[in-house]
Amino acid sequence: MPADDAAAAPDAWIDFLNADGRPLEAALGRWLERDGPATAVRTLVLTAEGERASALNAGLWTFDPASFLPHGGPGDGDPAEHPVWIAAEAPDAAAGRIVVVDDAAPADWAAYAARMYLFDARDGAARDVARARWRDWSAEGRSLAYWSFDGGDWRLERRG
Image (tube, rainbow, N blue to C red; front, side, top):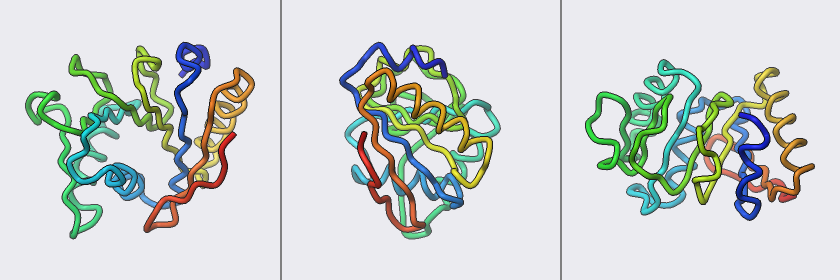
């Protein structure tokens, strides 16, 4: 995702979400549950590849047997009928927030009021890309927050 995509909306926070070695579907599921199981803010989870979208879509149904997180992806009907949509391409349906996985590149990053960048710092390549994004966006004056996942909940580590 080019750094200039984030520059278009300087007041929006970018939350860096470090799964810290936990399965991405578990980390993503816990993050999405923070607003309640049927989130009032539509969310796009944008992946770099369709296979990852399918895996996250399936994984969100099983990441916690006690959880019910309504969501869908390609093949699950109309994106506008799902509070969370997981795909490798943004649908026409508007979303208020975006979670970027695998350094996917949204066509219009600035179109979202809330932005999250999910990665696993225990994956060296993903960590390096996330660090480069943090440096670039910080140098541009973006408002950034860094969260880490302990397997059960998210913890805010710093804002910058």
